[in-house]
Amino acid sequence: MSRTIYLESKNISPEPKNMPLGPKTISLESIAPLQKQLDIHPVYAAVRNFTDLRIFMSHHIFPVWDFMSLLKFLQGELAPAGAPWSPVGNGTVRRFINDIVMEEESDKALSGPGEGDSYASHFELYAQALEEIGGSSETARDLSRLAPEKGFKGALAAVADMVPTPASQFMQKTFSFIDTGKPHVVAAAFALGREHIIPSMFRALLAKMNISEEQAPVFHYYLERHIHLDEDHHGPLSMLMLDELCGGDETRIAEAEEAAKSAIRARIVFWDGVLKALR
Image (cartoon, rainbow, N blue to C red; front, top):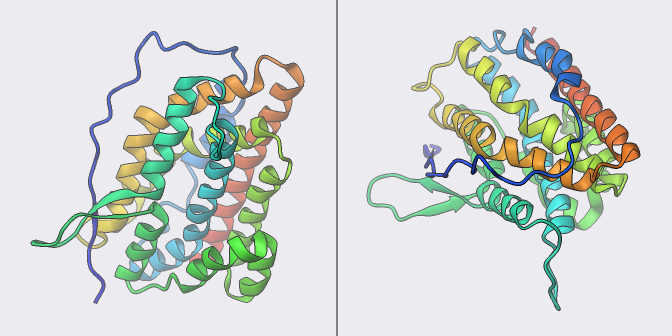
């Protein structure tokens, strides 16, 4: 029997009102129509029972995994590892990227009575949530295990027959941003294609799906954790990061805006595919 694991909400101080900002880049109004499509997508209300939730999560676990590759690419650019070391760029942005890596890669989990503290990535927690409702995370775990050795394309080829087509297409779009090698493009896909849109998207899912917290506690905590972090902390700082990487350059701003729109369109297409699987 799988064990329920609860995420512990951290006390994160709000960002200072006078936080220094770089040159402005993309207006949020430019992505508002696409975000509206996400907010009202019928997939959220289509999750009516455990069978539906297993189908939903068996697709969604792959975007949960590829999120970390966007994040790790950006960490390598903004707070690179290695020796000898030298500080890079804006200290606030460095703090943000390192904070989010810590929270996504090693968040604290609460186990049963008498058990000590344990830590896990959000991908691992999501996999446990899927297993808790009777689903399988084996293919996603295999992809995660193979990717460092074979690269994304090689790993995907090895498990392709087991990956839902909508998830495969979504991940390929994610890695196409990374393959550009352009930090501002990846930052746009991350900030506006993930951090900015996730709170309203997950709120809609919580409000409309017919699965209670008692029925799927870990999944609910996962959603609520992301709403809290992304809205209050990650979202605003991810925009600062994007501003810094664009640096007011018109070409970079245009590329970032197109990447953001492309990332949101990919999410809409992904949800369309999940909805088709549910029906």
